Length: 501
Ligand code: BG6
Image: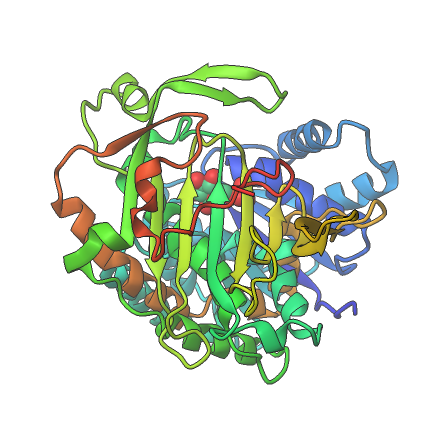
């Protein structure tokens, strides 16, 4: 169902940055091409440097050319370009925000509902909001005013609460859109529908039938140029604190009363709040961390590539030692009637043998072991790169003997003719529609930090050198220390069939 969007202006802070060049501008263009932007919609890009409108428009053309190598519709291009404007927000100009307000005040060019996308340094979130407020640009007396905050929302619970306090001096909760781009991924959005639109899953989705759940994000990429950011952050905060805990919440939450944003978010909050805090006195049985060392990974073109270890990459930037994890695996339990006693293993790692994000669910042993070697059923919801649902069942091997083997029912969720939509496209559309259901409520952010903070703290206090794993390999053997039972093991890509079967 196409929702109506009010005439509006998207004000893009950090417009010349990488995210905007690679994802946001091309994403807005595609929304325009799909007829999803309202006729009266303008984009005001805000950057530090003085750039003329003509030069900015030429820059945008370059971004689109780089993204859409096969070309694009000229008519759409002209319509899109006409929507675009540039504002230089010089950091040394005390009147910069007054000038921005005067520019945006021209209602003929800029529809007066404003959506601000803050693709800026996290330390700038609150100052930008404060200055917008000072010049009246957040005032909702006549028009809506919304602010999208990029991640991370704080670096721990106190800093997230501090940011929240600063924002809410100027904004109501309904005006704040905290982004987690995983919630814009179509396969992540599909988790809830897969669960609740199919009568066959719900009766099995509980502790009676499920042995354990694995939520995995493996990447072949290393930390790249982001060493400073990454070394201060680590895998736990970078990936698990929001992306993977959100994925877990969608996998495990109760059915919302309806699809209203408040209903969905309320169920996610309840779930996140019922995850048992990790027992830090026994941290080595609950969480495992490691760092990649030099090795060989499979590059995007399919060829092998020798890569440096994490510590070598840091050395290049003048840092001599680090106990920041690039691999993190954590065991969580959910204290509610549905999930009591079922381990949820959440793991994320850079420089693995493959890049794959998945939810893998292992069912309990069937009550009768009719033949030897009977495997347990697995259901995998694969998020990326391939979006599919795979169910593994035991089936008789045709022939004279009674023996079973595992068959896999593999349903691709994406069909050839389906649209490929970047998560930022969906989320920008939701922002303009005023639909916060795929954005984080502050209670979710707080619950996530409450879970992650104690582990970060315990790991920071433990100065023993980290376990090293070779880049391009699978999980370090030692990580299996967190499994509850000896017969549990890490699942890998559905395509490679890389499990122990
Ligand atoms: C980002 C992290 O939020 O998500 C990156 O900062 C990570 O380190 C990325 O690589 C993963 O996103 P995606 O969409 O590629 O799975």
